Amino acid sequence: MNSDARVLAMNVENINYDHLWHELFLHASADRISKHIPNHEHITCEPCILGKQTRTPSKQMDDKVTDKLARVYIDHCGPVTLTTYGNGKYALNLHDEATNYTWTFVVPDKIAKTIVNVLNAWKAMVDNQTSLSSDPHRVRS
Image 1 (cartoon, rainbow, N blue to C red):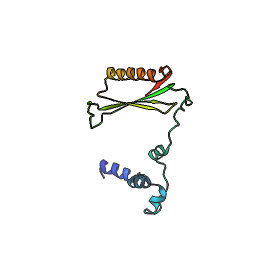
Image 2 (tube, one colour):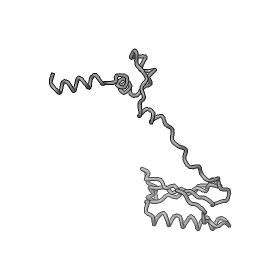
Image 3 (cartoon, rainbow, N blue to C red):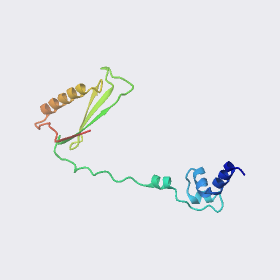
Image 4 (cartoon, rainbow, N blue to C red):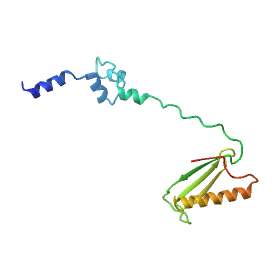
C-alpha cells in the first residue's frame, strides 16, 4: 500500500458519519435524520448552535417625547423608478415623534445642498405655522 492510499484509508476511518449525515441533510435535527438513518446519534454542530442564538437586545430608546418638535426623525429614500413631474427621484420624510406628523418632500437628488435647502424651507414653514421654535432638541436619521 503506497503512502497516498494509506492517508486515504486513515481519513476514511476517521470520518464521523453522524456529522456527515447531519451536513448532507442540510443541518437537520438528529430526530429527523434518525427517521431515515438508523442508529444516528446527536452531534454538536457549531454552525447550528450559532444559528439558533438570538440577538442581544438593542439599546432601549429614550422615553417618548411629548413636546411638539422636540425630536424629529429624518428619512431619505430613493431613488424610485418613476420620476415626478418636477424630476424628483427621492423622498425626504420628516417625522415629529410627539405628534406623529410627517412631512414628505420630493427632491431631485441626494446632494447635501439640496437637502439643506429643503430643511431650511421646512424650518421656515414650521416657524410660520406654529408659535413654537422649530429647533428640535434631537434629530435622528
